Length: 473
Image 1: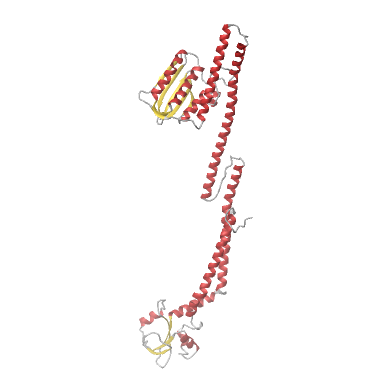
Image 2: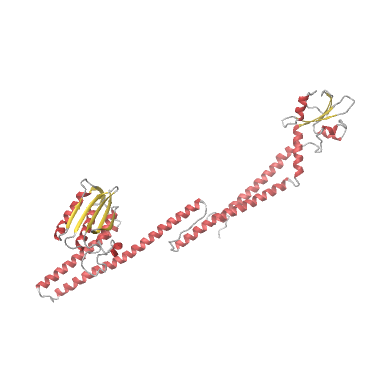
């Protein structure tokens, strides 16, 4: 078993994130310790240097009126760097108690009041008190260096509120931070693990063959994109699998139908040929009839095999499509001219409706001719004499529409959904040997689709059968 600390490969995401957060927590603890040591070593000694010798020092001038430099309060003041000044009624300095650090020998009302404001930018802290004395002293002025007073006051306030050491508070704050980070890391890992578990379950079901599996995620945008990609992939796989299944089913049915359509004429050919070989038919007229029947059936078999080859050729990867942008009218006239003899022989009426201007489209001439011939041959094969065939070319915005319609017997509605499938003919039971091979419309549709177009069947009043071809312009 691979140890979870050694490598990120094949490690569960939750374990990996937890380990990463633990490492982060360790680094955070080390950072807190470094900061604490820095405070202890560097900042603390700076503060200690600026602390006054006696934290009980009074900063009120009135507390020194009785001592005037002779007492414990005055000693504390002098040790902290402060001094006292005795002023007469005119605010002139009469006497200094301590080490005077400025050059002021007297004060007016304005300068004295400014000093008593004790702003943070002043060099000294001021305090004044009135003195009742017969020696001419009227005022007692206290002065202490401002930095000493401000530091000592702030430090005294801080110590007044702290009941434990600084280390205790650093430890408590660090513990709270670590606990918060651990809870957060667990919560984040759970949020990531949940959508991944849904994705994993969906993929397992897909691997088991359940291609209709879809997933719904309620997570961040990245996970939603992965979920949408998964559903799209599932759609493609399901559709492809269904198409493959239908193709396999169609292939099997194609083979069965081909075997049926080949067996019937070949059996007939064998029967008539055996009768002729064994001499059971001596009448010349019957012999000629049998030979014509053998010839007709062999032509039908040849046509069926050729159509099968054409159908398979269209699905072959080696098939070469030669699509060009060509004028459509002249091409259609040539195709109709090739079949006009058969149309006249069966006494059909032909209506060819082409635009006066030239119409260009992208198509393969050989495949296009095959499509038109197939549709006209179907109309000739399944309709009675005198049927009218209409061939019309209609230019559209992006396509050219070619309609091949007739007013014949029409195609049964129940066959419309499968009319383009292989081996579907007007006689649904396919028990007769007459008619086409049942592959013509299937080949025609594949040919049109190969050229990027479409082939559809419609019905209109007076024209029960309308084949509509669309090819790109």
